[in-house]
Image (cartoon, rainbow, N blue to C red; front, side, top):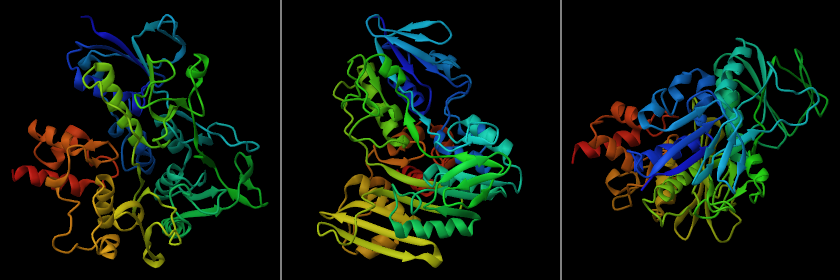
Length: 475
């Protein structure tokens, strides 16, 4: 039987992960003939780590997901610097902007999202106005951000704050302009945002909150809508993204803010799937890589025929701020207040120490948490959340990351973790993948990092990976 032709339109984090998952299930290409189309000239890279490139703590080559020999080694037909322009659903054919076409039995749209440029007078992409989204954007930012130069970051969300921290660490005078009353309003409550703002101010980042940009004059800076002025030689725009759905719209697929998919990640055409930021599934959150990588696993199961019952049921997303000197984790119900009669809500605030903790419990399970400057608590609570494990009776000990009493469930024991437990969220490395790499000869943390990329992101999982390594060595 000849292999099925599978085409992936998009060679970002979602498309690259899907290609890897297909190769893992079909290493000899007996089931799938794979074609990957990507608009960027680069090999796939980890967009989550771009703030580390801006900060200077990682080199651009260190964030690559594939090396230059990936396609020849895997026999995948990789077409870089080429975009899909249209889909002929009747002929099952994709047209590319270099004039070529590629036929498919199954097509996966992994086209991602595009940065949104706010309608501010004078604000146009150029040498001194850069939307922070790609590896090339990092190069443009570093080119323009001369040492000590004033920089304005538009947007106080996750990516904007990571860029701001990175640039401040390089010696730039950074001001974050954010129209909402507090930063990271999607993930943080007002008090945790206040503590985080104080911490970032200590690290050299200034803030203008509750005010928007009204006009930009190159070489001068931003005029804000309250009449004040922010000097800036460079504007970094991080004001959100919009799903890239043009291919789907032109092909007549159902699009409602994103490409609508079911639990098999199928679009309204059963031969076409969509994953990642371009897709819309009720259980997925936009802007986070974890849902995209979980979706890639499901689609790989389906297109290779290795697990026809595989379904995507949604993601329990965990958000981490990847900025040097800051340890922040937010998950689940972060906005639930103490006045909610259906939940237990514990909070701890230490603004002077730049620490904040919030734990939301429903039916004796973690329903949400915000943990700033509490890394031990973050590790335990995240695992309790992922596994649905009952919360120990000493709630305060859990929130503060103190040692739990004898007999309490240990969330951090590698022996108790299922193979599917995610150890490294930056690179979506599970315990099972670490075990597999260990059996393949990667028998210490550096070797595991080389084989799986675990610990090479924000570094927050280093102790957990070390714990798995020690547990395996003792077997």
